[in-house]
Length: 595
Image: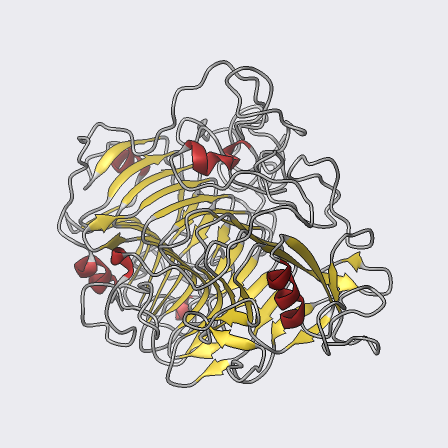
């Protein structure tokens, strides 16, 4: 059920939609596009500079030099003024002619629509979407769902006795390729947008996309049936990140259709202007002693969809599960499980974004982190839309000094822009401090559950030695804050009176060095950078369980949210995590909508 028109409508890059065919599409290959000027920065392991450091190859910035709440505050730039004036909207969409569009994806019936919609109850189905496989849905409205057992496509099965990488031209069900690399090379040589279906098993070499292609894992080759949980398809899995693969070549000079163009600092890289789908895989494992390690890097300037995958960074000085450099302008992360990995001495990130990205329905954790640094589940340096995600859902950050859920950051004095709607975001278990949401940029934040620690609070012995904040507003933050539940659960065994020495806070205003722990003081909008604030509450959301973040029927968050479509007129704001069209009665706060 997959993505893109709202990015085009909001002025961001988008490719023209295409049907699910295995021939006839233009494909661009070659070297990865050079990072733009905003991506240039210093070495990743030198956190003394106030500019975010880069990865080992000198590409995109990765992290801000913060280790504690005080460092978070100090790292933010001086106060910024919106060039359009303080009353200008943070995000807007162009006026449209009349269009009957029930799901808010821009497609429907009427003169003002982008085109006809084959399913007007699902914003992830339209002619602008990319086609997922074996989900029973015609995602791109091209005339039918993609099914691996029917094809067409190229097939890979590392466990098949008949598999062969001896030459190009194999890749049938009867004689599949043994490696993903050979299937990729065939697709690049043919210069067509090709579906590649990969059977369960472990594929130990790095994978790179230099041309348009779609890579689908999670298959049982007996009948090519799809179940990624049952048929785990692993890229990586070894002790060390592979860099000696004979079919791979370093992304850059020498990268051609005769080899798989990869970044050796990560398992999978989507490069150049490759229009790509990556679905149903597990990325894990790998060690890079003395260097950063990435799970998936998306460099492509074209439309990229990553769905139903489980991505973990591995182990290195610094770890990033999904790295999105500034060259990426049209990325959707859809219903993935993402973990930042295990850094040895530096920072960890689940998702680090310097491009344009939409995240819907993911579970993203910052991992344990390193005791000498910090861990953040999602960091944004440019443009991001977060809808219906669960961030830091468990014991994340238990091994780091400072942990955070979402950090909307500043890059070289330019504030990032974020629209944050209907998520559940928690700060994790940083030993010194934890922050649910830190805004140093420009953010619209509505209908979210924001928690400064873990969803259940945890034991008194595991409290932060410093503070935990559901929301931290840095000096440069500019914020619209509407109908959020700022959640500060008590610790098990917490002494009476509550919060005496616990340092649990709903909001920390860094500029004024003030804490706000009641809804009225938050809703008065007298805190730093507030553009508007109303309807926020201090309430226990009453989830269905410790790992189930649907709200219970008796939750105080039912029906007290707001209509968020003015903040994101075209896009995924109209559906909840289960695909239910919002609202049902009144708008609910959180990831789901209760009838």
